[in-house]
Length: 233
Image 1 (cartoon, rainbow, N blue to C red):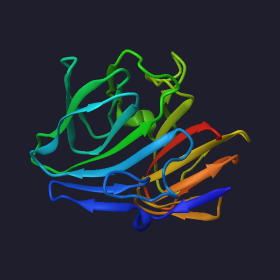
Image 2: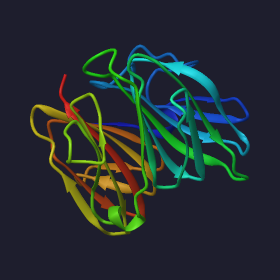
Image 3: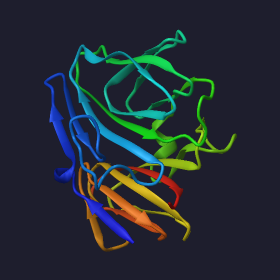
Image 4: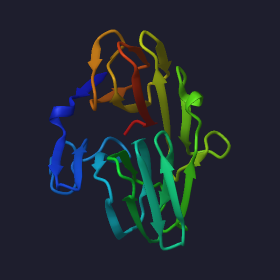
């Protein structure tokens, strides 16, 4: 089963320094019908103005991934990490028993990020931070396996049965992903236009739920696609 959530249907708030589009109920956007998708709790498509960002604030018991679409993002935390990642790179934080962190755009250009929160399979774990600096060609016309629950399958290991994949598809290219009958996936069409299983058109910012069905993307234009795959609940 495929269910599309158009970009225009997402929650939206613009604070001036931050323009956020919410795939799921979050902050000022409350929608009891869009609280989560399995263990996936948050996807925020954030546009951060230059010299602005999220000041130091706390988290606990959440697996958090920030994927930079455009620009640069600097992470600082109470474990003394201070790292900057750029377009096509990602940073991961397991908040566990508790951590403070900040995320800032120190550049002169707008930074766009996907911020993704996943509910952990255990609480009060030791907090962790890591980042992934991936060359562009590692995800062109093929899946880059960014997140896994298992060591050595992907550069980021989360405390949850979840896999995340990203690709950059050239116009006209096709790429498939197997979703087993007891699994499901959430798709974000980050950029470009594609068609899924020859039936569903996806444009900039759209979301798509795929439950128990394999998915094949054909890029109508150059497409930047992110997929979060997990057990069906």
